[in-house]
Length: 404
Image (cartoon, rainbow, N blue to C red; front, side):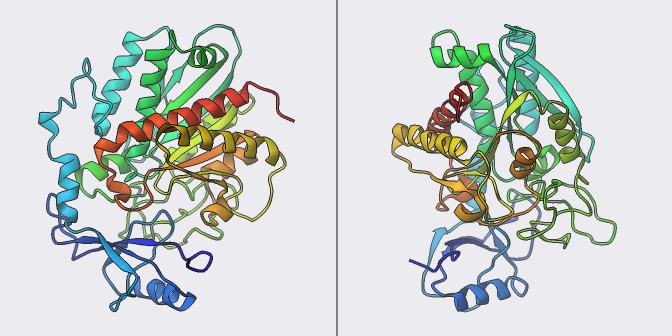
């Protein structure tokens, strides 16, 4: 087993950037497992010398010219893999609202049309609103889901797609809404959830970046804001929150994938959501953010190695959620504080939510562990979302119990 912190690295071996549709023609995805600190240093040092992109869930790491022996090719034709997700749209009725297919990935336009449709057809349970606008002027839509059974109810916030290329996130947010609407009359647990709680669901947090990942670069991560001094675009929306901002695990360089931005909440998307959460912090008892990939359930802290005050309650919820998830298909998630389970990172939404009084703050890293990575096949949407629903329902029902 590699030394602590030497995670398997999934690497995009890129040629010069090309416009779509042939941007990744001839590229491969290679997993490299460094087996010593020396190999890790060599890989990191090579990042700035080679045109190699990292598709790890962490910061930028790259392959070297003479790769270690511990490597294997995961995807031999990256362009073909990308086209398999985006090139067959007309054949799968993606845009049909009446027969909306939850087992394929949808563009931003399709997702927003779907949200409008639910707002019009399920007005007893769904209320759609915008918390603001993105850098490029797109509305930041949220669905409020729940029965209007009492004047005041506790709430759960769920967001997906804070990183543009993690398409399974928005797919899950849509799946959650579908399950809620289709099963609340027959499933006692779902009925209880919608009766006693409101859910604020943001299917696509990073709307500009998500749109760009469909039209220009499938592996785009950041927002699309412009930098006045550099030609690089975007900020990592999960390093832009006002909690230990731009410390370990974040970068000051605008061209890096983990660029923290010029100042906290510099991104209008982050600022809008932070404002909404601050305004409703007494009501919102859980914050759930969905990412990919690693198969982990994480809780605070991300920015330091320390135990949160309500550790026993949060750890218990995570333990039960992971067990519930595993019961579906045998997929075992690791769980624990983000800093020690994944890596240290500062300025994250999860830490910010917890620091602002939301007692249960979790970040899911959904399937898989790197074989497909961000190109998780559409055939795996259903099992991924099915098992994740079990975990989310478990956490939600935990909220409704008293924990000491």
